[in-house]
Image (cartoon, rainbow, N blue to C red):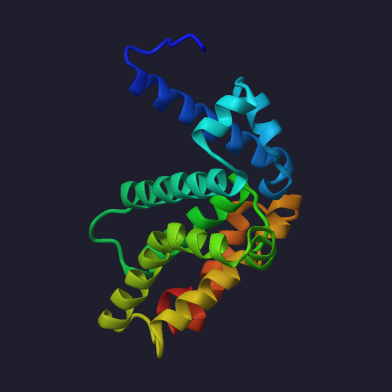
Length: 202
């Protein structure tokens, strides 16, 4: 039985789980989430595969937990960085920049590739884990629509389009062809112009 360094078994399990997810984060930057194996994660976390399987029975469960962690970090960062009186355009810019930073920090395959790799059921569960991020974007669009800053005919459809534009920068970011700052400026300007925002004309 592995030595327990924490004060309680619960704390030990929480620390081990955190170490596992930190290992996934490091490996995702080095080789991409789709190429990571459970053996890779166990080695990077400094535990045996048996211990790893006690926490996550398969790669799908591990990926879901990691996605939930990244989503929570995104929302915390978004709420921490924005003042309460930020305009819809400023909120949209922050959303775009944090999304792009996340794509670079935690490289992962596109939605179609993930769907093929995980299967429809697991991919649906993954979509549910990232739903809070999508709700943030919907709220931004709705606030801009209500204030007259944005011209939006269909908020859910527009949110999907905005996410698709952000996702289009995934490969250039990971390959180093564009920086987060440059991509954020380009995507934000494009989206704000598409939304009819005065901020997009500056």
